[in-house]
Amino acid sequence: MQRSFIARNPSVLIFLALLALFTLIVTVLAEGSGIGIISTSFVKTLGKTLCLCLVAVAMDLIWGFTGILSLGHFAFFGLGGYMIGMWLMYERTRLIVVDSLAQAEIPPTSSEVVDAIGNQIFGVVGSSEFPLIWAVADSLFLQLVLVVLVPGLLALVFGWLAFRSRVTGVYLSILTQAMTLALALYLFQNDSGLRGNNGLSGLQNLPGVSAPQSVVSLWFFWASACALGLGYILAAWLVSGKFGWVIRGIRDNEARVRFLGYSVELYKLVVFTLTAMIAGIAGALYYPQAGIINPAEIAPIASIYLAVWVAIGGRGRLYGAIIGAAIVSLLSTCSQADKHRTSAGSTRSSGSIGGGVAWAFLRWR
Image 1 (spheres, rainbow, N blue to C red):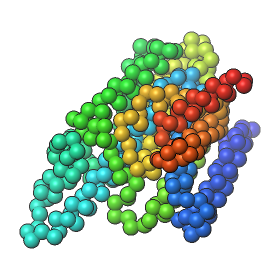
Image 2 (cartoon, rainbow, N blue to C red; image 1 turned 60 degrees about the vertical axis):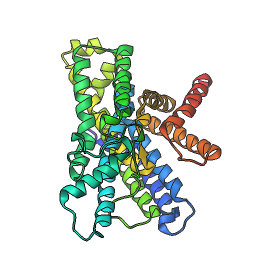
Image 3 (tube, one colour; image 1 turned 45 degrees about the vertical axis):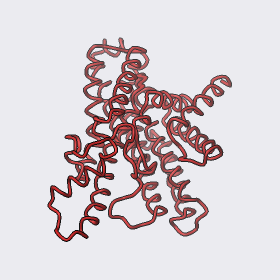
Image 4 (cartoon, helix red, strand yellow; image 1 turned 180 degrees about the horizontal axis):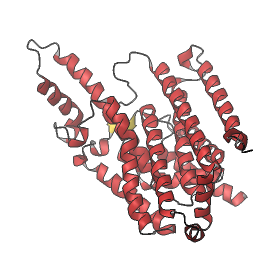
């Protein structure tokens, strides 16, 4: 008799139980619940850490199980953050503008309101007109769809072109890194439609929500924990069945799997696209807790650090990717807090510490 998914993967229940216990402890001790032992800033740091663990799970699926060392997954992570950031910035600015214009003797027209919003958002780059990519920024539902759709479409197109050409190994890694660099350089331009180097800011303020940051931070922490739990279940389910054995075979001997009749390119494309969508969701939860996103966050070096996290925990083990990401992220946060007392847990600084931890780990092994 075939065993159930849980019976084949007891680690899933153990992980979910530990995650639930961790979430409960943080909730009870957080400022938002009234006890106040854990500060609001550290709750945000823990929430961001859970998001980094989720993108590390995605990286483990594509690299640890499928054997594709992607150096572009932080680009998908950043795109998810930009998609939700567009709605947060638009809606927050709209409420401010509407409240300000409400004091005028003559009620403003809808076009005047839109012009005022555009001037507030894009005035920093010398513009006041909304680019085409902001066409649905006023709709939360559509922007949430784009959180998954945009990274997924980019991964689908890039993966189809790369895999059908049978680009593999280090050459594929270089291509993914080039894709990330091209995207980052484009976003740095003021005419990219996303405010260039200034990025999107004030994302920690939820439009129309009067709850204090201590409560909002808990909401995002809970959402991050749920996303990580669901992501872990999905990843464990994928690798525990036939699909998992096929992608392991592709990792170990791609030619033999192709000889057995499997569509290697299709399996690669599915994993590449799915993990990009997971990364987009993680980014959409991360950057509202960080409060800002700019092109520097998705520089190619960030994706390299993501691979470092997975290597530290041990690729091919989902819980290992989570352990590696959590350790490096929290070490980075503590280091940054000691040095600057500034925004903890930035991806660039976490990577620099990650490199040192990885070097020491590999030397020890």
